[in-house]
Image 1 (tube, rainbow, N blue to C red):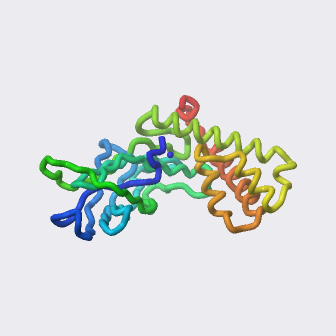
Image 2: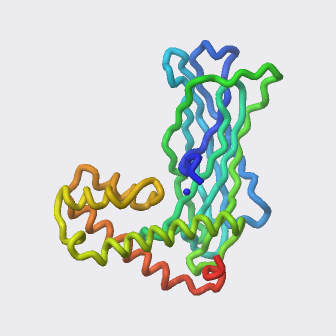
Image 3: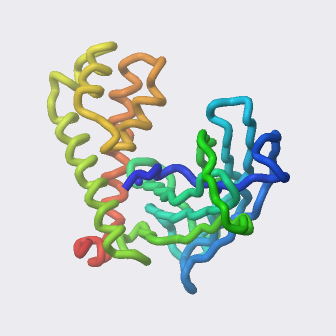
Length: 243
């Protein structure tokens, strides 16, 4: 997911005549993907500025990703760039790997572009003529459920390497009966000792089970491994091995 943040999209620009005034507005997110890309991105970016706050700029996104191919998709990577007046610009990647979950992005279907709001503080001083607010999305890598891929192979290698490392760690944890049979806080402690931001799939599980019993982690672990094994069986294309 490099992680400049890999779940963040947004742009920096100000509406109105002065950064000293509260303002807000929206701009369309333009898809600049290469011809033949299997996905299409659409939506808007909302921008808010409140100079009374230390973190004054807030960016929000609303949109969707459509699978315009004839194959189901398991992994997507989208590069977001944005620029504008005064507020910091953005250069981010959104990575969605469905390998550890039961659902994929079906052919002909769409899913929500799901990203949390992001905030910035200090404005960017620009003495030149303010640029026209711009926000773009570019699909950079896609992996289909059969293991075949589209897009930047180097980016794909990094993402799939991270996935394989996560799978290895999950499997290692499952194989340790003492850890798997632990309960309550002991389970959470074991998970926290193993995982960090290098494993976003596990981080998501920890977040979901934050206020739940330790069995939530164990059940989640088994569900993730079951989904991963099912996806592995589907990946029959030799391109997967080359990555």
